[in-house]
Image (cartoon, rainbow, N blue to C red; front, side):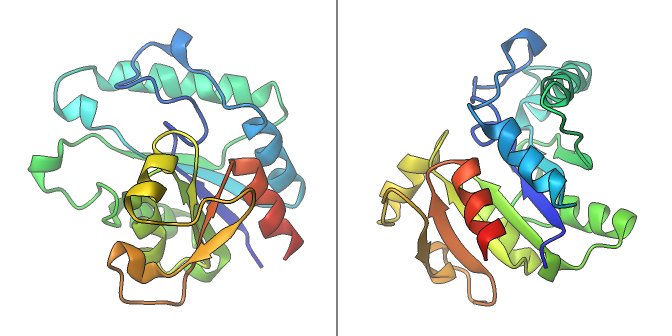
Amino acid sequence: MIQYFFADRDGTLIVDKHYLCDPDQVELFPQAGYALKLLQDRAVRTYVVTNQSGIGRGYFSETEFFACQDRLAELLSREGVRLGDYAYCPHAPEENCTCRKPRLGMWERLRAQYGMDPRQCVMIGDKKEDVLFGINAGFAYSCLVLTGKGKKTAEDFGLEIGGGICEFSAGVFGAEQSTTKCCTAPTVLSFVKHMLAE
């Protein structure tokens, strides 16, 4: 049974504004809050895991990042949603850290803190790295959402883009293990509904 819902932030829960650093620019995707409320009502907690290379590149500060996170929490609270927690990677890609998705530093920190079983977790995001994060962690599901950069990612890898949930092999992204179910979904809400119906 799924108990933990991991979600990328920019391009997945909120509109990707390219190195977002202004809390006034935080904009939830339509029905994203409703999707998380459906999960919360089923006792599934949501955790945000987000790469924020703009910090490491000097485009914005951690203080500005925290302000945007506070704004996200405020917008979700208006829909009755409270995030379980979040983790972020502040490093630029060339820093070769262990926490930048698809590496598992953020997962390992949250797992240690909350005692999570990967088989009770799912991941959703709009990039290859998000899907690989879920695969590498051994989650039950890892979903490429077609918002943000998701549609282009799907097209680049020849994935089927239908009106609903379309499953694909983890090998599409070069992953060897196949215990994680992979799929594309038009929106966070469509994936949540599919997941809860199973």
